[in-house]
Amino acid sequence: MEVRTEGRQAVVTGPPRLNMTAAPQLREVLAQTVAHGSPQIVVDLGGTTFVDSSGLGALVGGLKTARQAGGDLRLAAVSDQVMTVLTLTSLHRVLRPFPTVEDASREW
Image 1: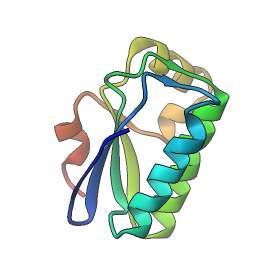
Image 2: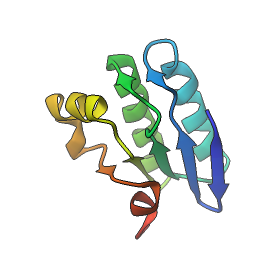
Image 3: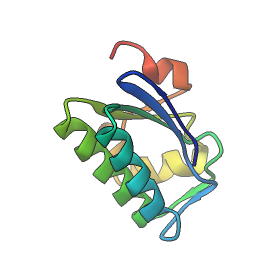
């Protein structure tokens, strides 16, 4: 997973499959990103084709960590499969998806 930071904002590139194998690493990357002073996080899911409950848990945990630090976590470039899972779980209301990283980064 790649992390690009610009001040208080960071873009984290999601893994190809956000499952129980990748979720702990994402959770750690998000926590470290906030700890290093970038609580405004965009998770770029453009290359992520699958997400399971572990992956959703990592994203929700990252959102909570970011908000506790005065920031937010937004999703960008969400695939159809990932959007279906977000919609079925109603998490699209909490983990706001945006078409692009640039759209997600606006108006912090």
